[in-house]
Amino acid sequence: MKIRNFSIIAHIDHGKSTLSDRLLMRAGAITEREFQAQMLDDMDLERERGITIKASAVTVFHRHNGEDYMLNFIDTPGHVDFHYEVQRALQACEGAILVVDASQGVQAQTVANAYAAIDANLEIIACLNKIDLPSARPDEVAEETEQVLGIPAEECIPVSAKTGVGIDDLIAAICEKLPDPRGDANKPLRALIFDSIYDDYRGVIAYVRVIDGELRKGQKIRFMGTNKLYQVTDLGKLMPRPKSVDRIGHGEVGFVVAAIKDLHDVRVGDTITDDDNRASEPLPGYKPVQQMVFCDFYPSGKTQYDELRDAMERLSLNDASFSFEPENNDALGFGFRCGFLGLLHMEIIQERLEREFNIEVIQTAPTVTYEVAMTDGTTRKIDSPSELPEPHLYSGNP
Image 1: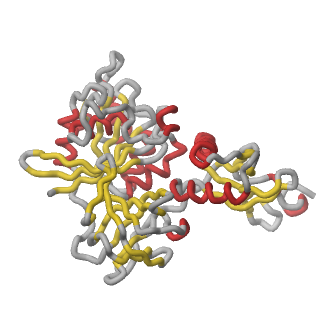
Image 2: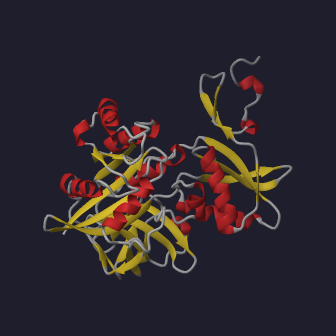
Image 3: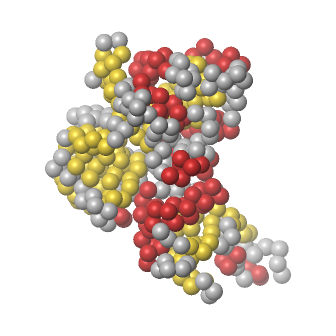
């Protein structure tokens, strides 16, 4: 069986989630009766706002030209505040479907995501979506895609994720154009952790892409970054509902359960290896994320400091682009200084704390990072007015 790993990337509201739904239907993973809009967006917030916040990895099977294919695809967010989710998803793939709205054309995040895929050395398939709209201009947008991104206009595949037109051509291109998975099945196990969640009953669940070797139930695994040892209790894939499997082979995507109770033992970007046959070096992982907006969260109402800390630890496990550190305020007491990728990201984190963990918070006004030119010629970064040095220590002051 041949394996194809790819991400679906695009500007916000260009139809990624609808296209994912249509691919699931075409591959027979869901029926017309089971179908619902934004099938992979399982957060209430995602459905209410009509946006994807978390990337979702799904495995489906398809037969093309007499051969069986395993298609592992990841639906990613389009908003710039969740671009780190996209970068993490791309590291787990060999290809990317770049969705372009046939009426709006190439937009800012279209370009940003395309270059992220190029930097990751992925094979890109351009897809012109929403050709069913009266305002669609597929020929013009195909030319625009060639001029801006260098993808030949004749290679752009026109589709309508809403009606299903062109989906067969897109799946054929995925099977024929995307390369086989990188890595070696005969080398010691190396699996990249690209996402994780916390389950009250099963502990930390790590979503992985196996690069070398294979993962098996009962296997003793070691996290190379934290050097922690665990035994695999369950393996599974999302199809799109969770389904247990006995092994996750080379080039495949799935999730690992190993009764991990300590949140700090699992890091996104870490490498899992076989403890009995260890890999010599870990996978490259991810670049550190750069937060852009900062604000303080303090417990409010019935919420206690420890409850807020535990909730934020669980949330940071699921969202690696969110950071926090302890902060103390004379008026508000003990809380946390939090870093976000943007204002929407900050808003989503606050809402998730309230909805998923029943946490009440007081939030301070958001700020950005400033660089202060010191009198000794150095620069210091600060993200709060309280961190400003004494006036005589920085330039422009006597």
